[in-house]
Image (tube, rainbow, N blue to C red; front, side, top):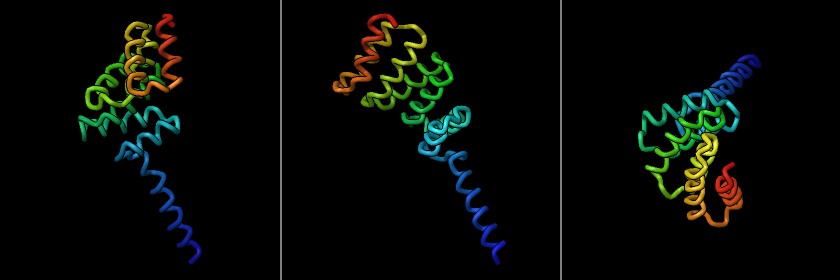
Length: 137
């Protein structure tokens, strides 16, 4: 009897751990990202985009993964898509600015941070990044 309880526990535990990897939701993909599992997170975000091509959160998540992987050009591309589908989220613009800083495109980065600040004027991080971009890195 103890073995069957243990096997049920282990089976349930394995199932629970597998759920984020299947990443049927943006939350699951976000958990992979937070855990530093960037390749798996990227695949999850890509799957989400295939299922819901206008999901700005999936594009934004994929952009953050690409930034972590120093794939700044790809990051800028998907973050432009995130902005296209949800132009009122300041973090989309800020992450685009970070990708553009990575590409050393300081004028465009400054514009992205400026847009983020229009939406969230009190954000000190956006302000610091904007100043960095204005100085040219």
